[in-house]
Every structure is written in C-alpha cells, then in structure tokens.
Length: 179
Image 1 (cartoon, rainbow, N blue to C red):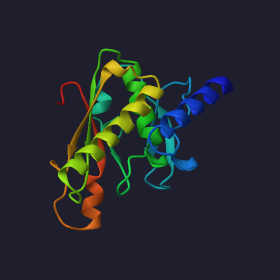
Image 2: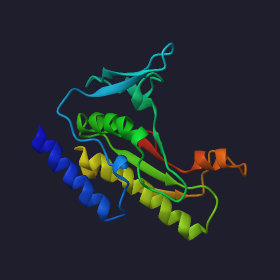
Image 3: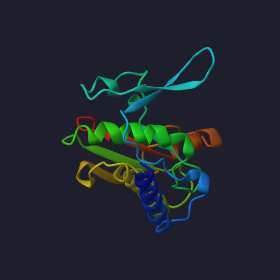
C-alpha cells in the first residue's frame, strides 16, 4: 500500500511539474484500494463522514445526497490547480468510472469573462485537462474522457462581481447521455 501511495505521489508530482508547480497542500490524494466512498454532511454537526458507493446502477448520479451528484470543480482566479476541497469529489468520480469501463465523461473547462477570448479558451482547456489528468492518475482510462474548453462562452452567472466570477471559474463533469 505504501509503495502504491509513493508511486502515485511521484506520478502526481511529475505530472504537476510539467504544467505548473502546485503548492504542497494542493497535490491529489493517493489512490486507495478501498471500496468507493462518498461524502455525507451531518446537518447537525456540519461534519463530513464517508459512506460507500456501490457498483450498482447510475442512480447515484441523480441523487442530491451523493457526492457523484456534484459535477463541478471550482478554480481560483487565473489557476488550473485542483484544490484540496475537491479531492474527495474527484476520487468518487474516478471510482465510479473505473467500475464502469464503458461509461464516458466530457469535462468542460470554463472561465470568467475577464481576459481575451483566446486566453480564456486556453485556460478553460487547462482546467478541463487538469481534471482529466487527476482522474487518469486515479485509474480512469484515458479513452473514457474528453476535455474541452468553453472559455467564457457559457457562464453560470453574468453579473460583474467576484462572487459571480467565482461560479464561472470551473470544470464541469458530464457523463454519457448528458452531453
């Protein structure tokens, strides 16, 4: 297990160095040989616990209580490094895809409306590829993934405010039948 974790950490470091050196706290979680898991927030204590994801049907994709229902990874301004807060989300989607080898995912990278069209298309592509690389490092086959950039073309919010721009700096994960 330590050997796998060390190899995964090394692979993540090499992959990250080829793009941009991430801060140590932003490296991806190591691949685990455990049952798939999902986050569940206790409404009373606001603490997060882990529950197992089965290999059954695709109902989890439509269940708002499932981690797999969440499909967006948000990025800081002018960044394409996946933050720690999205590790469990990426891991859950990786486990789901590895258990369903025929299922495909389209990852759409988006940006806020600041910057030129060309710059935003390039940044959106880097965001989509960042999610794709993370999933591949966690065992998803590259053939299951497609990364595209939407740039600033499909915003969730159109107001000129930081809270709105933050909603547009994202990578969205869509499964077969959703695109």
